Length: 178
Image (cartoon, rainbow, N blue to C red; front, side, top):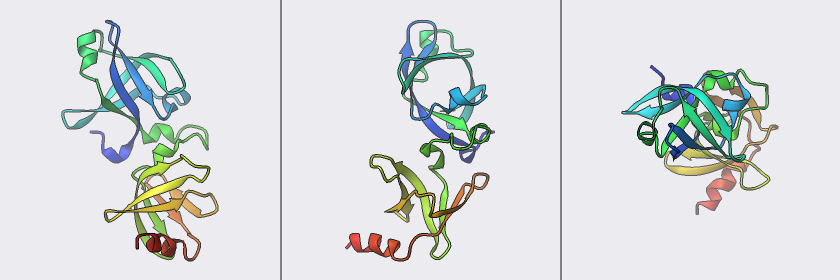
């Protein structure tokens, strides 16, 4: 059985394309093209299920048409409409260093050497030049710079990022909530 901590979201199947079972796939990470992985994972009836890739072709830098093994008709492909697509963490780690997308880190715990557990990475904001981890801290949002000089350790097996944040950074975030 595939557990949620063993995968991370890379995109979404949108709708069938044509009558041969192809699916339109919008992705945020093209890791499936960069490493040797034979399958993607989708939630079906409450469990994570692997689906083997038969073929795919890119339509743009964020969309592809994908054919899964055993999905041979438009009706079968329709079952995947608006279905999230996940990628196995173990295969992502096999790639070249530096090839992971920011989405890989969603779900990691963020630990600070001074303040301890800060929360879980709920999202990564890449909309500005300064990439930020969006941390869920007990229902509150905490923004932490995803800067190499702050990151001391990244344990992908246990999904923990250890940081040493500059003194006062967390105080600034608390002051903004007032």
